[in-house]
Image (cartoon, rainbow, N blue to C red; front, side):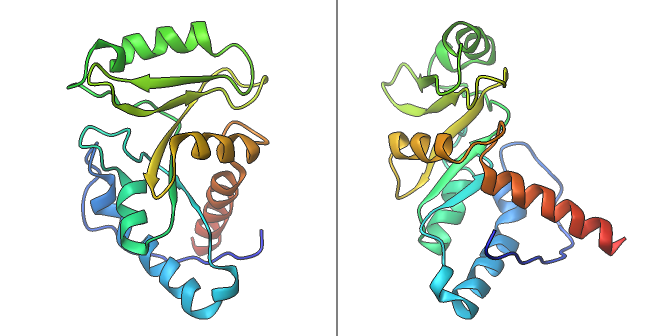
Length: 179
């Protein structure tokens, strides 16, 4: 970790599934804007987002929203599958869970999530041999799905990519010290 920053915010909007970006994107944009001004030499080439990109009912999750606003390539990485209801049976929770059990047998295995329309929404990825639950990777902004998957796999020492894992651990520590 070469940089960390925190911002305590009071979220005004309640959590509504499928609308995470409207609740959480502004503080993220503020932190990234501060980094661009104060430490431009370490401004990120890609951002891992703990949330979905186009693997989203409206094809525009938090990773897309953030990427567009800061104009940086973003990757959506979610621990849970957000069912897509309007593009065929293969994007239902039941089907995806069944396929993951069959197709994701070892670390590095990938199951591309493709709807009846032919659209690739993202991929279920088994990050390591030692993990059983997949993560769900999707394009956020200015990156291909294959590149996103490759970067995610290269960054996984545990189930989720290390940038996301470290951000989660360190933000929880920060919150504990504020209490």
